[in-house]
Length: 261
Image (cartoon, rainbow, N blue to C red; front, side, top):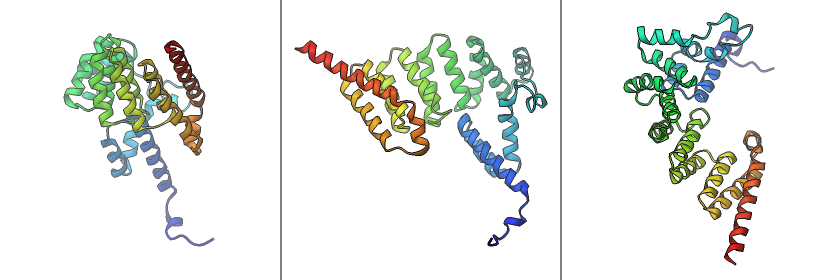
C-alpha cells in the first residue's frame, strides 16, 4: 500500500472532530438556524461544533428513554421556561418560551415573547416561523404572510422548505388563492421536485387553470423518468399522486368539452 504523507500521523481525534463538524453542518442546514452558525461551526475549531451540539442537537435526545437520554438534562417545564424568561428575558429564553407556547397552542401568550425576539433580531428564522404559527393559530393568517415571506427570502430551504409550504397554506387560508399559486410557482422554481410540481398542479386545478396544471404535472413525470439516485428515490412516492392529478386534468378537459357541446 503506498504511503500517504501525514495520514498515519493524524490522531483519530481529528477524524472524530471532522465527522462531528460535518454532522453539525448537516443538522444546521436541516434545522434552518441562522447563517452565522455555519461560520461558528467551521471557523471556531474545535469548539464551534461542540457549542452547536450542546445548544441545539442535544435537545433531540431529551425526553428519550435510556442512554444517552438519561445522561442529558430533562426538558424544562412550561412553568420553568416562564420563570427563566421573567427573571432573565434574553432572546434565547424568550424564544424557547415562545416556541413551547406555540407547541401547546397558547398562541396569544407566545406573541409578545416572539415579537421581542424579532425586535432584537428581525430576521431570526425560528422566531419568524413561530410568530407566523401564532397568528395562524389565532385566526389571522394574513398577518403570518409577511413573516413567512421574510423567512423564505432569507432561507428558502429552511427545514426542508417547510416555511414555503406554510406560506402557501396561509395565503390560501387568507383568501389569496392567486398569491398561494404565485408562492407555489416560486417554490417549484427554487426546488423543482415532483412533490412541489404536484402541489402547484393541484392549486392550478383549483383556480381553473387546467392547461397549465396538466403541463406542470406532465413535465414533472417526464423529469422523473430521467432522475437517478437519491432524487429518484425522493420523488418516487409522488408518482402516484402525479398520475392521479394528470387524470383529473384529463377528466376536467373532457367535462368542459362535453359541457361546451
